[in-house]
Length: 309
Image (cartoon, rainbow, N blue to C red; front, side):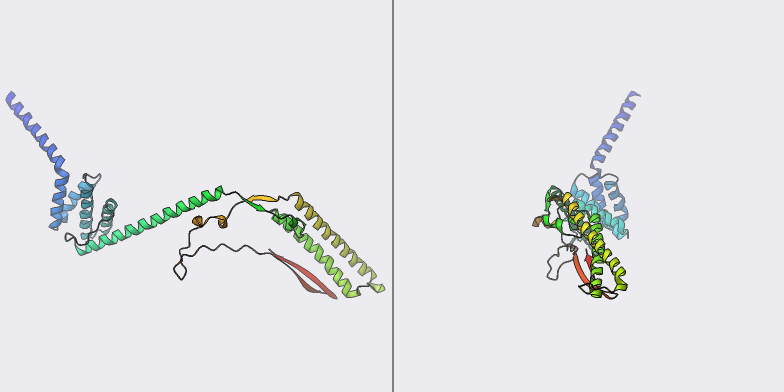
């Protein structure tokens, strides 16, 4: 009885050793079996073996074996009409070996070779786009850090403080206040100048006013003088306010014009006719202009002051 137990134990141990040895050699043997089945065109046998070797975790230690297993499984998927799985397996193989090509390999059909080459072209194109996006992101980050390191000062001329129509306020960055001064001076100055032109045109420079129009002319003259004084007062107020807030040098944010050539913004996707990349066009700075135009008035003439900004 004891001898029988010993014999049984030896048999069990022998089986364990045999299984251990088989498990150690199984991946390479399974790959060989899958390869031979694929050569015979028996994808039904090759596919389960290859899937077992690759998923859920690879059981092949050599990169070359992994590449071959993915290619064989992808070719089987292609031949069975599963383009999605074929693409995935071919991409996995290309991830492991980017320069892989099936051209001239008689083991695969022409359709499988063409599909693999199409997949490889797609992988290369995605890689190129990803590399461009990474390079662009790095360039933008480099540009951002450089612009943050810039300390740019804007020099403001002193004489601008004495220009009317809110010029000093605009220079100081007080746009709302500048618009208020400009509008007040334009309105009061235009009224005063318009009434003066009307009186001169109606009664001449000597101011000979008929007796029945004296009151009317005096009222217009008072409005003319009042609005003129208001206009001059606004001009003086604007000058004083501008001088109070004047800073000869102000730190401002630098723009792309201050960047060195190697940090200029990337070109547009469109190219010029000669093939050279076209740089992005910076929007033109708004121009301001001041125009004095004649305007007819009842019984005389006036002037209209227009400021475009």
